[in-house]
Length: 388
Ligand SMILES: Cc1ncc(COP(=O)(O)O)c(C=O)c1O
Image 1 (cartoon, rainbow, N blue to C red):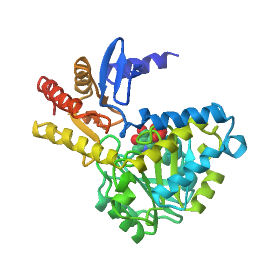
Image 2 (image 1 turned 90 degrees about the vertical axis):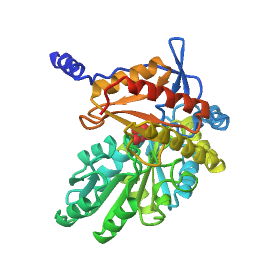
Image 3 (image 1 turned 180 degrees about the horizontal axis):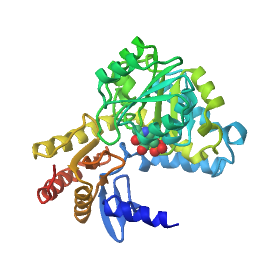
């Protein structure tokens, strides 16, 4: 078993060791650890709905009514009535015929791509797509071609030059999880139409963030009916757990019959599904949350850029402060923690070597005082460190 210790020693040597730290949530953006209170700038709980009374109550009522676990996979015993309600609501929200829930966004991507991409097919994938898309491509029986990040000339080139006897699928994050930038979905769709490819977008970080009332990238770009597969997760803006796909009824029927991560896993618990449904209802009833999220993101991004920090990314609540080396990212995260801020240090293999960063995420649950303090602390800490 020496190889286990050897691996751990190696990651430690490269400042890439990861350890679990437990925090007790106090509300949507505050946590406590060892008697210390922290402000969270590392949560994907973009709208703060994990602590909405309506969402919590819905989960509790569902547990009272239906119990805790679902007891089986959906095709056997676990398909409790709340699923259908949520799937109908998701399809309406995304403007599609139907939707299907998976147990996580990760399982959705892995299960959809591996089910769709067969022997003679080719999947074209952005190089910065989420790990779950990459793993879906690895499991697929067809060929994977990776195109340079958001580089439409390169995508056009590989579509033109890659022989394909079966289906083509272009897959992209809608909002990239570690960079916060937005995929050029309008241009991707034009290329897909030219080369008769299907398009799949993963809106894990776009729902609740972009488009009218937070409907995501298809709505943001005005592409209704032109994107075949819209993936999302209930675990970020929708304050629960579970992934989903929205698309045609035929796509959903196909996945129910073919997608292994859907078929061979126990269904989500009633409380989890009910929380996702209630959060979706809250999002629809309170579009001002999406505006506040945008406003909060703009404020922090502009303040940090004005202070000379290197922020890439776009109009989203994911604000990456790229610092370069993994050790610097770790040191900066530690110093921020000492000042009461939790910000994730993101290092390889999550990002490329030399591109380590602090990944700051802003929530609609942050108030102005939180954000002013955050900006002041980050600027002060960054002055004492050697950033790229
Ligand atoms: C772009 C993207 N897709 C999928 C996922 C996976 O979603 P989940 O956390 O529901 O498994 C994530 C989450 O981290 C993500 O960032």
